[in-house]
Image 1 (cartoon, rainbow, N blue to C red):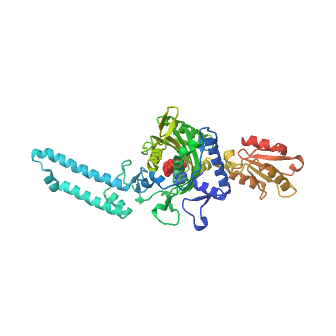
Image 2: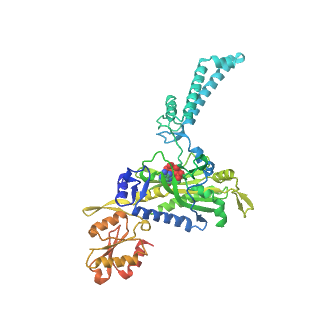
Image 3: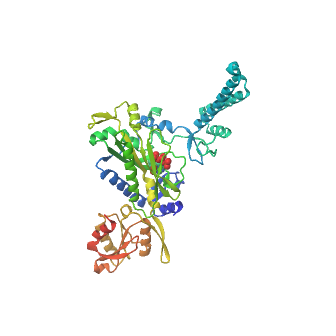
Length: 500
Ligand code: ATP
């Protein structure tokens, strides 16, 4: 299915709505509807169980969205996201527009140096550098060019004029070092972080940021958690929480949002052990995704060739979305960069005393970071299928049963002759054991189709026979097989079929 079909399915069946829709929507912000919130909660619970509860050496936290503003200075977010940026459309590489221009200027300087070297050779002992520099027409031309560009650059930066920066790039015909083309976007100055004010006094001291990643809440709590949970290295801290980024490119439904949720785990290891653990988590996370056993799923690794300055290994797990292979999860070996930055900026020691070697060190960190909403989208894309059944078509959301928003739908064949009362009795018995849904409106065929579209793995139908046989019909979403099961045995059979 293409992204358009997925978006309309999400709206029709109450999974996802555009935020503020009646006010024409808010771009790249989405609300989860009744079935969407159930699916999202189930995904979170599954991640938490497998990452935290099933690992003796991983604990969770829930840190606040607002943090001390110095945290974002230490992490590099305040400075690194505050540049005039430009993207090359062919290589998809993003650059600081001012650095591109400065690099170009240095090429002119190199040309000048070359001219000087040539002249030195030619004139030998008689060479006079000052005279040459002030009279040689080529050098004069290059120097004029440098001076003119430098003044334009300074002027544009001083006035925050992004159009002027773009004009300079165009005039100099600057090319992308990777693609070799000058197919550029416009220049934009932006910081990806949203900011807001705390308290009544409006000055810079009260400026706060909405966190652009959950990881920093883990780094700054590293010692609190290590000491209170009495953890020894290697151990991990996990967190699920909202993150906010003022994304520039935000046109791909819940793939790229301005408000989203991350599920991150920072694993603290002894320096030198990080690549071993990086390989371990790379493998474990890929297995985790594959174990979801989606109906249609295609994953691959994308190893990063160009590493961020703080990383010594990094890769993405990519999923084949309808828009192509795209990052679903990042696995990064981030050295001790974050802890050492926080140690420096806070002036508090963050080192760990390792009793085994009787020495202290700043641990290295391997992180796994997956976007909950992106994972939600990958699960939808891997589960939503259109099937031909006899002369009809049906849309089925073949979700893994443990993630389905509704596990069992209880459906009386008709809403009279006591069938509805009987169905309610069955519903009341099962509702504390499974996520159940009672529905009596529309024909049974239509109700089955609706449950298929929501992804409900099992439907229980109460018909006239049930009234004397005490048996119900249990319908399987994927095979559409129907079996009769006695009400007494229903709970056990459902558990078996759901695999729980
Ligand atoms: P991208 O390159 O797609 O912008 P990123 O490399 O900036 O992503 P990270 O900072 O590594 O992403 O964040 C970890 C994970 O958080 C990503 O793998 C992705 O699943 C999720 N994520 C990041 N940005 C967004 C967003 N704007 N909307 C939804 N999920 C996001």
